[in-house]
Length: 248
Length: 248
DNA sequence: CGAACTCCTTGATCTGCATCAAGTCATGCG
DNA sequence: CGCATGACTTGATGCAGATCAAGGAGTTCG
Image 1 (cartoon, chains in turn brown, blue, yellow, green):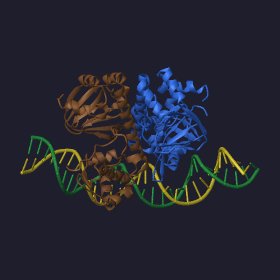
Image 2 (image 1 turned 135 degrees about the horizontal axis):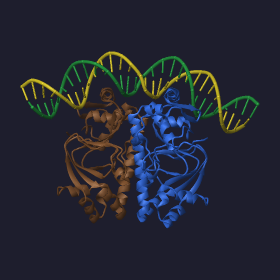
Image 3 (image 1 turned 45 degrees about the horizontal axis):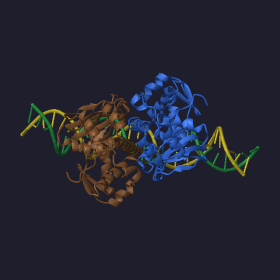
Image 4 (image 1 turned 90 degrees about the vertical axis):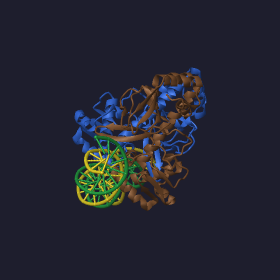
């Protein structure tokens, strides 16, 4: 583990308020590993022995059934993933693979559960994080069931812009095929939808999204804080894509 | 509150392991209310002042956006709902309405959060419950994104049967229109799907589901423990329908 | 530098599911 | 008891989005 890693992990909502001794104990029992791009870190159904913290790179969480796959979430530094399975000591419901070369800290689930019982502030953080994850995926489900795919794309674009303080232009945080799968559509359909949205106030050039008419886009997207956030919550982990960047 | 209420609440996973004094304190700060059928108990966006416990009747959790609505879950006695919002002190993401005349216990969210800090066993139960809710809705989302509507109906029928110990016949726990909305389809489409499924080992007569050829149904549904359960988890609250009953 | 990928796009076609419109049946209520 | 209401079904039609097929553009690697 690098010396600069600890403070970065420590500043996460999940670990920020806990006792220093307990934090050191937790991280003392952890490992760091480097993984090449495209490696399957976790196969759904495996026992959840570790909470993962992405320090560098990017990890895709995805679900498989029969021959089909879909992207559930993409995790970028510095964040954790699959807290629920670790805490419950239950099998992972999602698989995980690296999208790039990644460096990941592995915190043993057993250590997590032990410290949970001994550090009230940590327990509060865990429950808040978990409730945040739950609420995040509820939002996601609402979007899937209540909106059609064009509306989902439009509100995704608008939401990203809002997260960046209303930026009129930004760079997508993930490849379009991942965005499509995350939004529950095919790459072909996303591509055609992007074309159609040019008449509704947003243009996409490669990885760059340019909002040309915010009002018009909002009219289509009908943004709703109870779906798109922002929440008084912070942690959205487990069912979202990373934030976009304003500049490439 | 009736004298028989307390033991019924106490036996819930969420309250079973906690300290008796703390339990009494929690319930001592609670209220009971009776509501007629069809009443909106909670409007999405409202502050989450109470954790709700359904003692009698039935409650539908649903989401709204624009003019559209969808059923997220139906809660029957004895279970709690919207734990996540209460714990986080955040606005409800779903609305709730009674489907029948219902009796509901209201536990103040503030009391919940206080006791969480003072009773480690309760904290463990809360975090387990919440993780269970999260995992339950992850399963739900996987089903929505990976299966088409016919497969969702087929696996729903098969799952219910399995929950009843492999019963070849049972009664639906909710109206078909709710089932349809829960499964992300229209009532018309569900109706037609039921007809189509007669060739795949299941027949539906009114509210009664009869599995005529389990193997054939399973071939279509391709049940998967990582979507359909059962889990080592118990609590599935927040994103499921109630269990069916074997006899009407 | 060329070749082999992979990602993305575009076109053509097909189909699952929604929508619209009646009509039946059961239930509850005046 | 008869009417009204709401749940469910069935049919006709339309559309959103999937699938299939092919081409282009950027990237990686020998």
